[in-house]
Image 1 (cartoon, rainbow, N blue to C red):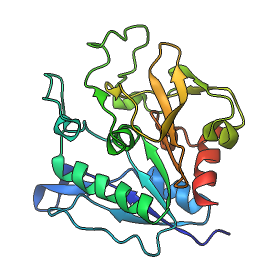
Image 2 (image 1 turned 90 degrees about the vertical axis):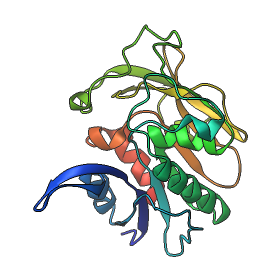
Image 3 (image 1 turned 60 degrees about the horizontal axis):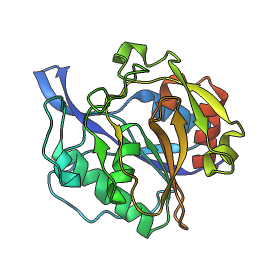
Length: 235
């Protein structure tokens, strides 16, 4: 048993509650199920309304989750027309979480939006819409209800950390994103790409262990690769 505690970031979404519809911190329960599966407990970090200097004391691993688009002001660009569900509060909260995780050397798994934010944290930027950027071979922006479906292959770089975790060179993944990494940040390498060239995996080259994946392993949690990723984070 691991007996570890995993910190997980959340989004904000209006939800129907007894008084009506109110803004709530939201997180897919699949994350909690996967943490519990490996005998870890989950602690959530919702978006903050100030910009605190986080302490991650007692946190053994960190997950930066998926969600809406990242405000392009975080990488010195103006917003394009197709941006949706932007939350600067969430951006700032998660960037502070990444900063603290690096400082305290806490193993980090960054998923979809989190994968993109890890790149921005390290000084990289994004394609604000991959279709507009010319990537039309694969429909990456499948609707949410297709999150449990395998959509396309990704090719994993040999000898990357992701390759060592999953012990495979190719993986079939789900896909529910319309943005992607454009220019890579500092101290990062590409660990996986789709066949049309979209960056699907990144990882740090420093002492701090951080892995980003563009797909959602929590929604295909029966896959061996999804379990291997969470096992790496927790154990």
